[in-house]
Length: 355
Image (tube, rainbow, N blue to C red; front, side):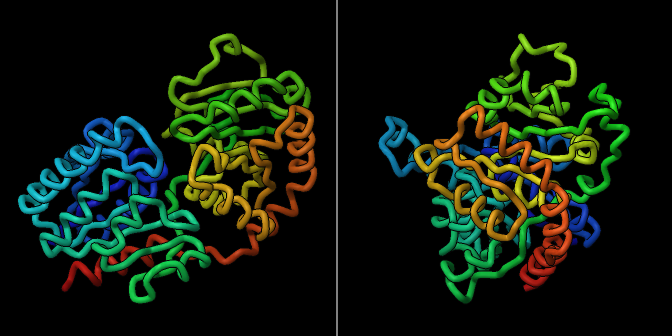
């Protein structure tokens, strides 16, 4: 029986594509193990699935000054030694990495142990962790056609991003009951990401009284980002993070506001949900979300508002415009050619695990 080690962590976006592939990997007869950080979000998500989970030391590598820049390289080195020891013990045929800083020592250790490692980059430009992993990888799967040209020609493969198939099977009425909503107003879903987007949460809450005149609102606000003062507000529900009921909440939603992380926007596109993207600003990130959002805007899948240009009035107007034009966005997404990413990546994994 073939054995695969999956790795990826830090945010849900570095874990959910791995989760999306698990059923197909099991179907192909793979034994699955997971290497992540000691206490990252990936630990909880993977252990809930009954997959053997192994934690290693993880340090963030930054492009800017931070006191932790002095200690984190030692954490990465420790992570490498732990990953190498684990890989020698587990003896997998192949490693698949979804990115995040915890994956750097795993992918480098895989090369040292002569185990083929395949990595996946969801964003248009590779993040620092994946840049460090590319020399040790046999293939780099990517999500955007634009990414292929910036990668080594012998390694780049356009695969798209694996989407959790259960998201496509939601029950609208079950979602309505879960939220306690009525049928007389459309539903707006706001997604702050697994870590919670404080500024998106704040902007939405500021215009909430106006929004509730026309919409019912589902707010996924992230861990520790609930607003207790809004509990019991009619037509408004807030959750830190939703797992089991998420497909039903998507089925119920007419339009969505989201950050522009690659996995989130690919899920919205696969679900044909008209969306307003508010990318993480270039001041607070490397600007990948802005590139992702502009690509989706260009293809006619999304509207985009950059954080710096948001006012209460502008946000409200854009939401109304999105709802008015929702059928155009739905049609554009329906007409797009979605790749069978899971099948494509699993085929690559099978190819390299047989060598």
